[in-house]
Image 1: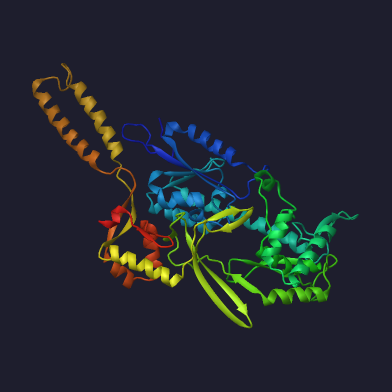
Image 2 (image 1 turned 180 degrees about the horizontal axis):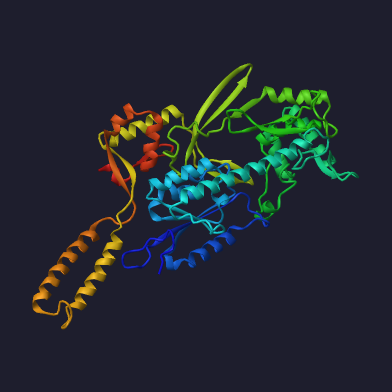
Length: 520
């Protein structure tokens, strides 16, 4: 019988066990989209049909509301954990369709490099079985499919951009949720336009009056919540939000953002990414004549708008994104909830003087009174310099003279196949020792016994060897103190994250956690 392409077998003829990780991803979980439950069922059916090839499920990595274009596999919450921490536990990644797994040629190349560095992991697609992704041409096939997936993502993006561009300078509403104070209606020409929502306009004017009279943003937000006033998002909840039962609440920051949006003056706006940053800004659309596009009657007069913006400018406070600015991210953690801490930089400007206030804070996301907030209930704030110095003190005091070892991935030997072969050989030799068989005489029986002794010795040695892929530790030839004094910050962070070093902080106590293997 011919062995299927890409299927390894032991010398005994039975297929080698293939441990399969099911990778599920979907950008937006809706009734119309292919559900995660359906794709999981398809994956398990696909595996069941290949049990004769040694396939067996070992886990499921589920990433809902994750864009393959924006997040590479290594950066996704579930799949990233399996790839970084549990690589020795699986041999093949099974996905429903390639574009559910990856949509970038560069990301696919990174995954192929990762697979080669971790024992030659394989990939398989449920809905594209005609392409053998476990055979000798898997790199070529997957790279080709990745290119096609990237082209499809690009074409989709171009179609969306083309539609938006064609409607950019028109006074009709292109779609989406309008700013608070306006609502969408259909005109006789069949196109959508904006008009004022009388009730929301009344609420807006009340908010502005109270602000200009000296009331704080937070006091107004609390009052609106107590009265049960629907927020801009809460007044138009999506079907998924309704099913989840989530309730949106007014916040001080939300009020400021809403009142700074020039869409309240009936101006057509667009969102664009701030160059060099990871956040977006909303700006007016300027037509070919250099004018702002008026698509609805303004809610405020020019004088009122100027007064609102002047008031907000005098009370400026922004918080920078903590992404990519936190030293020892994933190493320094909150001691109460054991989650990550990040560095927040608050910037205040008063009378032309701008000051920055960096703080380490817990980044656990939770819902309090219907509002999203960051930080567990017990969290405390730390000055970054003080906290890093405290971390250094504890690390060097406890482990400064301990050798540093780096965790590396090791591909295990295939001892299972040889041990199975020895078991079969011993059975054959034992049967041949019966009278009338090959080793049935006294002379030949001694030869058989010597052969069995050799096979038994080999079997015992193989049984003591690590057989599967695993993590091992390699000495760097330096102590933690030497490493701290000579390596740059990025190298220190990488080593500590990779080796599981954690520093847990509470208000008055600290806990340095280093895995037992590193304490040797």
